[in-house]
Image (cartoon, rainbow, N blue to C red; front, side):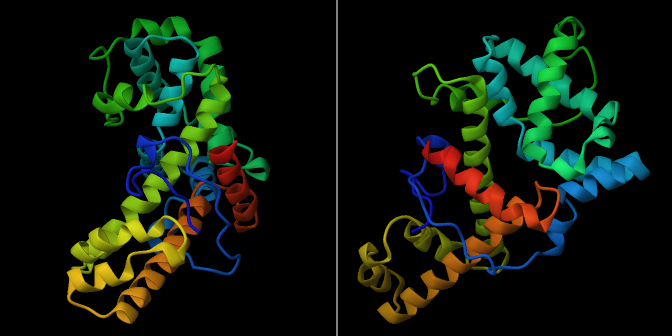
Length: 266
């Protein structure tokens, strides 16, 4: 069973997905698209040539800014101040090349970002608070128009900012995986097939409406089962690739996957 939610394409619209077994260790490979944003390569490029690391780092930040926004909000800052602080943080991160100081031996992009944000909030609040939106160059096009709508879906119970951050990170990563998988199918001219089959990523295999899907798609039930099997395989591959892009080495992928699902189910 793969991670479940009320809507497979919108993990962020639900509470934590239900528990799921991890993808098999040997499943999937690494595509060139993901290798270019691998965290260890970002760190290495930033140490040798900051400009080489800037573009892949910016892509990672654009994907994973929201968990930091949720963390800042749970720390008690207003929506407007949280937007200002998050934008200012990423501007400073890129400008000052903080990545060059990252410890790849402990390398997870997730932990690096949270530690850097804590330092930023502790030491640079006054300067960041003075830089209101529009007061400086916008380094990253972050979608703050949806930030608060996403944040208000957080549970009402008083979870720590760190717990909020970890869960949001996991949900954001799963959203990235599904968005990339959908893009894969659309690039192959199979967007409608993905739209029809992606609900089968949720729940037990025996509970899927294969017969109804076959009828609606003008296909056979065995063909639909085969297509869903391939979809699940590609999902697992993309999941591993996405996780690999946020850790320091291939050896860290299994531990990060375990952490991911623990954050979703705790």
